[in-house]
Length: 233
Length: 233
DNA sequence: CGGGGGTTTGAGTCCGTTCAAAATACGTGG
DNA sequence: CCACGTATTTTGAACGGACTCAAACCCCCG
Image 1 (cartoon, chains in turn yellow, blue, brown, green):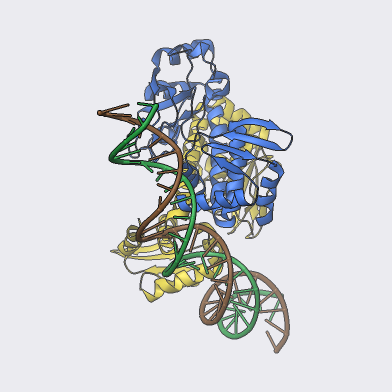
Image 2 (cartoon, each protein chain N blue to C red):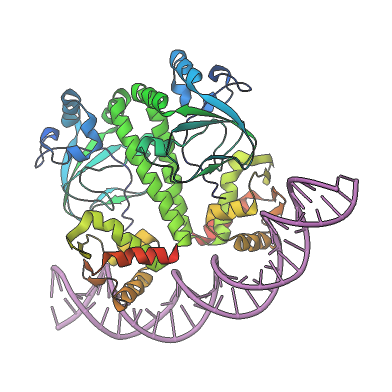
C-alpha cells in the first residue's frame, strides 16, 4: 500500500500511440525535445495500460529507467509527470514504490536512452531540475507542517492543494472536489493514522468547514480553509 | 533564527582566490566544468568572508544567483556545496533563509552567468540533478521519520547522519563528534522543541547511549544507535 | 448472503508540548 | 580577568493531542 511516487520521465502517444500526438507532452519536461530527439524516445519507450493497484516498481527495486504518465495519476503524479527519475539520476535503488491509483497509460523510458538524452539536451535537464526543485520545496514544506501545524490545518492545506487538480466544480466561495484518494491515502499524505483522519473529517463536518461523502468533498466557503491554517500559523 | 539552507553554486579560490586553486572544487558540482568554462565563473563570482550569524539571504528574498561555500558550513551545507539553487532554478523567491553558522568564505555566482553555464553544460546540470535528487530523498525520509519514529530514534538517526561529516575521532565501536550545532539547531533538525531535545539527550546519557558535553558528543558504541532505530522501525 | 477491506467510533495511554522558573554558558565591557 | 547581562539550556508539572487497541459498522463484489 506504499503508494508513493518515485521519479520519472514524461512521454507522449495517443492511445498506445506516439509521443508526437501525446496530449500530455506540453505539460511534461519532454516538451523540451526537438522532433528528432522526440523520435528517439518514441521509438525506445514502452507503453502499457495499468489498472488501479498495479505496481510500477517496488521499494528497493533496481532502477531500470523512468516512467511517463498519461491520462492518470500515481500518488500525486498527474498526466505528463515523469516519475522514477530520482533513483535514476542518483543511480540508486527506488527508495519508494509506485502504485497506480486510477486506470492509466504509462510509458517506460529505458536507462540508456534517458541518460543519453538528458546528457545531450541541457534544456531537458533544466526542466527536470526545475520540477525536482519544486518537489523539494514541497517536501520541506511538508516536514515543517508536520511539526508546526495541527491536524486541522494540515487537512485544510491538503484540500487546498488538491483543489488545483481535482476541483470538480467551483463557484463564488463554494467548492466541490472529486478525489482519487481513499481516506487512508489522505491520512498518509499528512502523516497521520486513518482513525485520526476520520476524526478530523468529522470535526470539519461538525464545524461546517467541509463535507465528505465517499470521495467527493464539498467546501461551502474556501476562505474558511485559509482561516484554519492562519489560526495555527 | 531560521537557519536553513536554500540553494547555491560552488566556488573555488585559495584565500579569496580563484576557482582553479579551490580545494573544494572536487567536491562540488562545478568540477564538471572545463578550464575555459571555469574561467568564466572565476571572473564572474564574488567571494566574501562571513562570520557566524551573517545572513546570506532572507526568506522571501528575490533570488539573485547562487552561492558556493568554501571552508565552512551553512546549516547542513558543507564546503563545496552550492546553495540557493532551488529558488534559482524554479525562478522563485527563496523559500527559506540561509544563515552562516561558522566562519566561512562564500562565493556568489550571479543569475545570468549561472544560468548560461547550466544551459550550455549538460554535465553541470546532471551534477545538480543528482545532488538535488539526494536532497529530495533526504527530505522525504525526514517526513516519514517525523511521523513514524519517536524522538530517541530520530536523535540516533541524526547522530548517524552527522557522524559522516563531523566525526572528530573514530575507533572500533566508539565515536566522538564535534558538532557545529546548538541544541536548538539539533532540535529543529528533527522537528521537536528545545526542551524535548534536552530531555532526549538526558535519557541517552542515563542509558549510556551517548554523552553530550557542550558541542562534543561521545558515543561509546555506535551499534547502539542502530539498535535505537531498529527498536522502533 | 457471506466475506473482506475500508471507515468510523470509543476508551485508555503515552509522548511531546506548553508554561514557568532555575541554572548554566556566553559575550561584552569595564 | 572578572562582573554583569543576555541567551541558551535544563528541569519540573500539567495539559493535550495523536496513537493504540478493539469492536462495530458499512459498502462493494463476488
